[in-house]
Image (cartoon, rainbow, N blue to C red; front, top):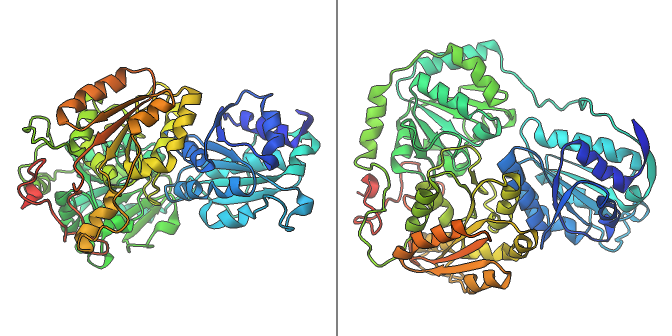
Length: 573
């Protein structure tokens, strides 16, 4: 099939044929031909207020749907404004496609108006990128870019298209067949001997532990991981991005590990004799001091990206491949387990902590973030898609909201991007229009991208926003408290009246500073057809516990003080 098209038309023709229905973007001179052609195609374009917002929206869309999210911008500042969002997607393996306009091919390199070498700028933070200056390359490049973004270990891809390539015409040739890229091998397979060795280590272990990472959800392997864990009778610890990949209330789920993980989880890691790492990369926030990390454990690492093997932690067996397919091959080699004594030992580490049910504790007159997040979890029955920003509230959400379903927690892990939550939630809602979507953000991060409230109003999107407002850049303040003798340099934070700000955009705004008002405000937000912003004025110098100081041994945690003002736990001692 062929027909004459401009390069601008081919952009949309190719996206439509690839199944893309929604893009997030901001127009400008070098991408204007594409925007003019867009009106002819069945594409929903979401007009963002800043190009960083477009990339975070595409990212949220990708994480909520499993499909590639698409963002579009003009050259120069439009393209460079996308950099933070691209880096965020890169570190969290999120498949997004960024399409940028570029100045005409004849003036590239002349410092033309709004010219930036965006392929050079983004080379280290994209899985791959392209500069297209020939109209005949537009269709095959977009086809190839989408394949690269979604295949193997997912990631961001950028396609920069010159203005003259958009304006030129050609007879469009569309080849929907398989992409052939010499040297690109996203589908690898471990040897039979490696599978046998991994099975021997697992079957011979007495104190094994599964470390479930983001790859569990990216591969769609949640069911396989659950079956594997139940058959082997192996407890499961979660990375931050792994949360949701294994049901939170399952008896084998221990909770989150790492810097702000639970004390008993980190202790179990240190006492384990085998770690089975599934789709995770042994990030420094997970391991602490790698020299003292899990000193008695043999390590089996399964990941689709072999560059992660032995990068941070030396392992005994590395199985390369898509996690779901690897588990399908490994599971028949695994004997049914009975590890009651190990599970009992972990329960003893946990002590008397049952469920962090703070609902029935006396009202002390103080409002804590834990109250807010616990009540949101309870009222949504754990079924909402929660999109968090970065900071203390992010860790409290991981501790107090119990995620049962994959892709129900969307957060910036690797890059730790403040300002991520609001735009990413817009993308998530458009990917899952029937889902209840909540933003949990701090007063600092929210202010970085709060202009996207205008996007919400214009697009008539319904989400709920819980701002955990403590008047500080909370996580930085916490570090200053612990390590800088409470010298609060540049962390006290002035904020606008967030409730009034929401009302300025025609949205609903509320302000809550009493614990007794949390439930009514959440219920009202859930019933409101419009987006609701709730400004929760919480305790200012509250702290996330436990905490492993950066670079410290994983078992050397700063634990909760006793008595704890919110809830007593076993690691309060």
